[in-house]
Amino acid sequence: LRDLLGPDTYMGGNLAELFQRVVQLGDEEIAKLHPEHNTQTIQSLLPRLRYFQDGTCIVHHLFGGEVCAAVRAGYSDAYQTAHFEVPGEMFQLAMEARERGMGTVGSTSNILDFIAARVQESLALDYKSNLRFVLGTESGMITSIVNKVQDMLRDAGDSNPGVSVEVVFPVSLDAISTEGTLGAAPGALGGLAVVPGPAAGEGCSTSGGCASCPYMKMNSLAALQTVCDLVSTPEGEAALKAFEPEKYSELDPAGRTVAERGVIPITHMRHFQQTGSL
Image (cartoon, rainbow, N blue to C red; front, side):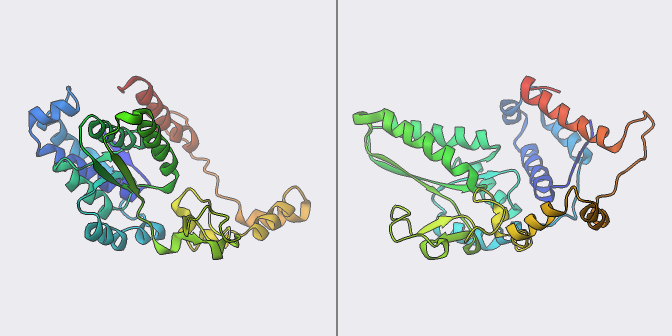
């Protein structure tokens, strides 16, 4: 099996680093991660794992080194979590924490399970504690985690020995809004002074890092309305033709188009998610 990963440069680099660290664990620890693998199988994978190395995203840089340095300085004692798609600095921080039992890296569900397990462990102990979790992922994940933690603390009721949980979402200053920038009346946000997300309706959405991208901010509602007005009119279609994406007509030896070949990895991924094997 050869794994050609693209176009996410950060995810590719993070996966390569993850496997390089896994190789150093030894056969016994690797078997705990997956019983069908060992040092030799993971080592043999590394030369066959290739990823696109020339990708770039200005938002990844905004949420990269500077934010990671702030987390190291202010939250070195907190649990660190990171999704596979975060910039390498944040991923490395979570990997280091994972090695000392204070963090995890993985999918959204992996991070949620990790946080829930740590909260459950603290609830089972008979002393007061405050847990802090740093989320190295997009803000869209915050709601599900907060809801899960609140449900666990609520269900504990009087048996809660005094466990409190703080969820820290490191974010660039360019990706926050205040009452003033939102145009909200005083107190309309329930006393919140800062709200993660784009300012004044700019950006892609309030649930993703694209809100900080200056190029995404160029996509205003007025510009979108202009394009919509051009669609389905002879003059408009003629004006838009110059911006139509290139269509690839080449076929592979099996007679498949580029689009048909592109679907194959997705179907394999869905099969793996459903069955746990390829």
